[in-house]
Length: 127
Length: 278
Image (cartoon, rainbow over all chains, first blue to last red; front, side, top):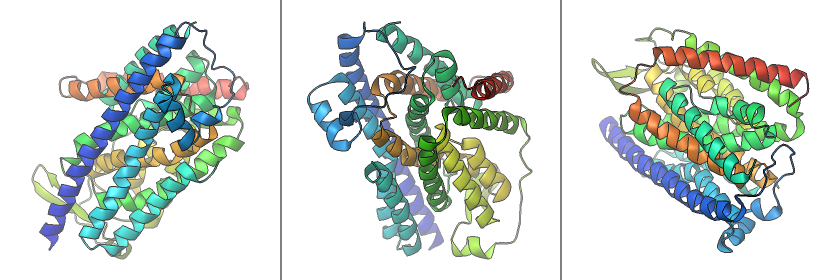
């Protein structure tokens, strides 16, 4: 029983490792594409991050970011890439729910659902 | 300065931070916010947002390499992630209400702490401690491949470790750092988990913790794509390079030098926070 549990743990962890790496790689590629568009269009403009303004609404919400990325705006594509990056650990947690369910470990299914809920709340909940 | 020059300079500096962070095992996250605020004069809220995103990139990339070795304990990680993500939500909420001077000063103190912690010898490995009833019920005890075969370990002081993890999560959400040092402290010192298991499990948790606060930062408009892009790409490239070089480089003096840099940055952050310049 115990060795079977360890074996499944190991298999889950390997899959998670691949998931994490692909997520990071994919987001880096998307950010890089966005960066090229952004720099070609705005590279010669002066820079100013000294004053804090906050981002416009279309770079804050899930829907706004997707719309901006589909319009092929550089900043929108970069933000979409960053969203993919933030979603990578969230996907890892979601996948772990199934992993623990497969091991019939109800307590850890519950713990993982709680973590997943907190992550969803942070992404979608407060405005 | 134009956006192109700024981006290239920032990308290069972030790459250096990621490289040294990976080589010393201290993480590049701790120096990113001081780098951005002190040298690039970026508002600390933008800086923290950029740093959080980079922390997710490096920890997810590194975790993929670690999990294969069988050191990390996914049950300990998941159980403690409840604490770190709740803490991260609190930290991200605090970031909106606390003055930027106060954030800078807390950052300075945490930097001093991580410099001290990186010089401190780790506690001797505990063998054959009795199983803690709570840890047993939570199925936290495990085993890992050691030099002399598979070694089993019993987790101790679960409530203390959980509380420390909550604080680690809050600091991560407030300051945009991975809080790796504090997570390892909670597992290695408080919960008596073997050092190797602590560090790898901590790395696995950092990304999830940072994602919890990054969501809040994103929806609040603290994540600027133009600023985060060079930082994230630079740190990621630097840390991947660092992980490749790690086996070939002797890091003792590098660690010492990096600790001194951290102390200098800590004093600078404290000073600027006190003078209300950040």
